[in-house]
Length: 401
Ligand code: PLP
Image (cartoon, rainbow, N blue to C red):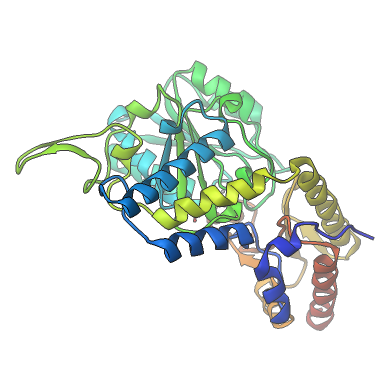
């Protein structure tokens, strides 16, 4: 008998979904939101919205203060040295595009960008397109059978021509933690700039960017139980000034005339236009909520559920796991049955899982797959959710085989 999730009641949408006969097992795509976030959004919008960093009036001062308080909270959450190292974007995707544009001027034709074979399209395509534009070489670090970047080969492939290493911390398809410590140390010793896509990793255990030793770390708020439309780019103090300004408009400018302009440094210089104010304030409230909980209890709960998920899949005939997931999710295929058919029957039974290529087409193709089913867990899931999933899966397989 698995323990219920002590935090389930903090997420009102879980009960609402249950009333709609939906079991939500797709948190790696986006997570449900805690009441603390809903309260923060209602408070901000209910008490007077205002733009930040520009108005002298009271609502503007309050919004700016709340916005900058969130920047402090994010910095503390990641153990950044200073709040000014946190740049707000519109998501992990826009943070990675910012990096691929902002670093372009540092790369010469023939130089190399290294990514891994398991990257989400968000950490593949910005670099691939940059490589095409600038005649660079995109080096793809191979992944071993368990779903981890092959360290031995990676250390050979990352050399003095490598100018940027950009890799995921936790694979959104394979659920595997990547050997970042060794990879990042090696890349930095070669003089490369290091970028970590923390979109999945940030959700499972608090990450310490100083310990990680990366130049840049990005994530999306919406996967970390926060609002959508907000992303975070952390940069090391020495790394942030390497970025060229990439989007131009209000608030990022120091002085402008018709023919020329000068720009602010990060973070504001990289936050052109009105930022997602309510979302940033909501992310701060979400971190406040998460920070009040026992992180080790959340990890233990997720680990127990994950074991239960893996055991249940292993007990069923014909199911093949994709890789050997370390945490939080499991992707699988079933011999002789198309993933889209299983997904259809799971959906009909109210099971919300993800099916397809999971925005990692080259990885799936490399594994000889055109798609897989992914079950992903959040802190609010419990044993009953998995039981409903397995009985729906059994029903589906009975019909399809
Ligand atoms: N990187 C990884 C590993 C992801 O799983 C995702 C989203 O699924 C992203 C990047 C992109 O995040 P977003 O769509 O929030 O920008």
